[in-house]
Image (cartoon, rainbow, N blue to C red; front, side, top):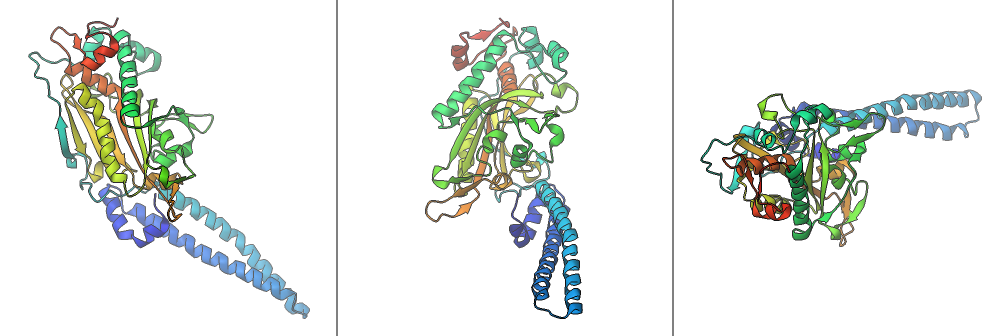
Length: 425
């Protein structure tokens, strides 16, 4: 979200950024037109108010009855003209607020320009893609044969896009979650938070999921409460509508929460199993930073999100998203992807993004500097560290054996008390 003054003074650069994001320039033009209309009505409203005040003061000084009656009539007419102007202001202001919420953040200067995912840029890679001496199987077949995950019975309970983990697979979810959260809080200095999984709509507006992506969210129909699609929402909104001391920055939060998303992709083999689900657990990293350090802290957050991948020895790559593949709110984003040999493709397990002051403006989050007392908007950053379903897919498929068993990396073997998975028990 932007200040209207900034949009008026930087219309051309914002227009270029909006277009680079793949949004129509008309979305900015609408905001500027509504802003101009609102200011014109405000001028007219103030003129009418001045007329009412002026004629009201004159009434007491006029002795001639006919002249006084004329002033009274003029005052009454000016007063009656105020209401439709106030109504117009309210209507245009609502339209302007709605248009502002639809306007995307502009890409950072270092973000590559491109229209879609084909314009994304490889940054780095690591780990070794396993050279299996057998035809790798996908995680669905492996997990079902070992009795680890029952997709059929989960569909009976909840429909498609859900799962039932049993035995070793259930313990693996718990072990991964606790280990990744401990890694971020103990090694990287994040404060652990246990937030609610239900938030008000205003929180989703603050981080940018609403109003544009309302259809992708789960909502409690009887009240204004929404299931969180990511812990980014409650963590980033902790200080919404507050002024925090710049000396306290950066604020670094980590949380393990369930996440809920209605979007499940198109039907077919690409969405089988754990690739796209409606509910999943995820460790989320959130930072609130000063504008001066925001983008350097984005790079550090990326390294923190990569840490569990490297420790597990999984093959990975980091991709920087081009402008046309960025989310509505993001100015710069890196994706972390893991290779899944049985599925035969790279799977995104984390997006690490900097939003500049875009989210902070939407949620009215401000900071005050100790030296000058200046109030301004901080920057916000978030990234997954990591999402469990696709991480589980990568572990199962990369560490599979020819006999269908799964070798566990040493650090997981220690936590689960077993070196391999041969069955659900």
